[in-house]
Length: 87
Image (cartoon, rainbow, N blue to C red; front, side):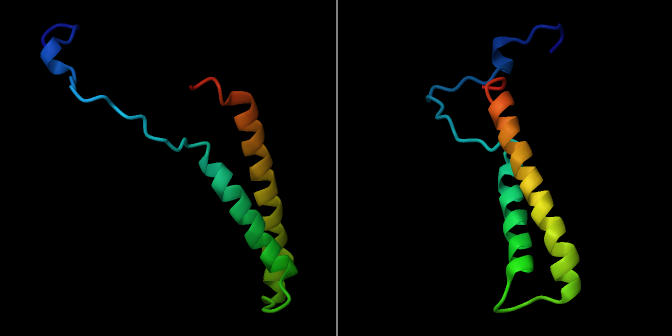
């Protein structure tokens, strides 16, 4: 490209119609991570059949529980207020 305008040969021309693929936004990863953290934290706190060690039950479990709940709420609010801007 010599000038600032591209020539027609530089663009991508396809004779086949493009199908829209469902894409996963970077913000939607929080929608998967949040509930996973919430469930893992709940397992550590409420496990009765295979209780983990106490330091995991009382430290790691609640941390994962609260971070997962907060991440899920933040993701839901993000989708509620900012989902239409990028469509």
